Length: 446
Ligand code: GDP
Image 1 (cartoon, protein in one colour):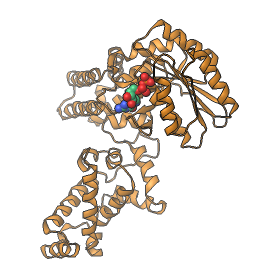
Image 2 (image 1 turned 135 degrees about the vertical axis):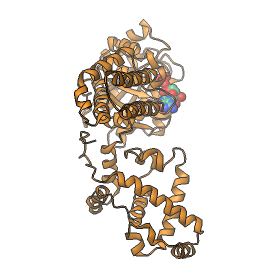
Image 3 (image 1 turned 90 degrees about the vertical axis):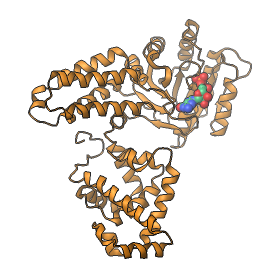
Image 4 (image 1 turned 45 degrees about the vertical axis):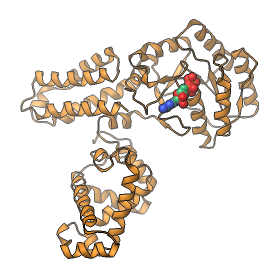
């Protein structure tokens, strides 16, 4: 995702500024210009970038900066808040209520990923025990019904559509009625797209909306459309009451800034993002963790969620305590390797921890890393309790390294490599010392 590059550029701009001996208006302006250039290149709309720049200038008080406050942190926080504001339209999207017949209508251009997303959305709720159903009111694109049918069958979701009926309005009405009678609680109506915005498409959309009377209209947008996002989203919003946005193909080379524009244009929040072609490559979207990761600030709430999910309850307080004490032993490394193995995709977990992301887990080499971790653990199994519980690497003398290598059937070089990894991690871990770990949802301590 190119958004990661954006985060890197913004972080570098902030770093450069804090390296300056004196922060005056010129240095601040340079930093803000670089941040603006990065945002523009990520396809954030020009007007929004300019607004953001002005807002930050207003918020950031140069006197505070001169007085030796942590400049980088003050500006980073201002950038963080501004990006969050851009993504926050000020009102939440409609949340379907389980057990009631919620009707959700999907709109978007052809190729945006609308049909795929309908199934992903249905599947997401189905996994949580809902009873979703799909209605194919796309009679414009040949093969649309087949595609929906195929997806729905794979996910075992009931569907409605027709090979012969050409009136999408009629299909929408019949489909919604059918599934209401069958007590489905999430009736998803997939509508036609066109290659470009056309009056006929919008008229059809209005009519489908009229008969299906949706509780929520979701605008599906391909993240790679770039600067066109704002106008496109606005055009849809003007025709139907768009209440939420789903941005697709965030896994590709998209610059992603269009998501921000779509929110501004529709005044509706992004609720999910699509991250691949498969059914479960779909993530609920949360603004603060997203922006936080974008700026390389780590995602504490995601990290805490993971800790709650995989670290046994009785070990949680102890782990957090150890984390803030910064006293890293080989045993902690062993336990963390164990936890990490349970956590699933490593890079995903690691990217949530500030400073960890790139260093421990090179992206795309997860399998290799997993195998290495396993190997390290076997070697640690041959170590004594004293060695595991000490944070003094000097205990591992040459003869002990030799014994551990022999005991685990590995080479001396491999044991040394494991110890090097320990030292490297201990250094990173040391950075956590005294760190205030925010409670869930509270990012202010970052
Ligand atoms: P529609 O015309 O808007 O209904 O679009 P489709 O659902 O047919 O999707 C168009 C293409 O985009 C298909 O090849 C999908 O597999 C692909 N697609 C949809 N969502 C995603 C996504 O999140 N990531 C990737 N990589 N491809 C996607």
